[in-house]
Image (cartoon, rainbow, N blue to C red):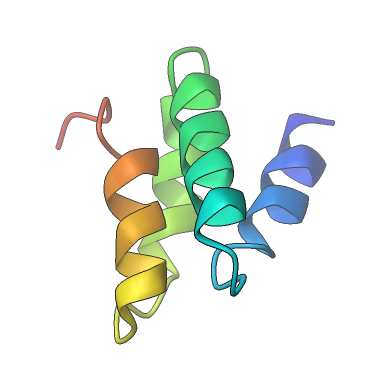
Amino acid sequence: MTKKVIQRLAALKADPSEYVRKSVGNALRDISKKFPDFIRKEVETWSLDSKEIKQVYHLASKLIKD
């Protein structure tokens, strides 16, 4: 269930709306509190070529320790 939620949120990482992207990043960050490995695996697959995706990446991975 958690993986499906993460996938659905991650699908919006390049949304044209900054509001949506911030909401996605914050939701993924909140999920990372309990499931850091799931979020880590998801964001590792992202291409950080666009500033929009980078924005979500930084929010989502804020609490994940390397």
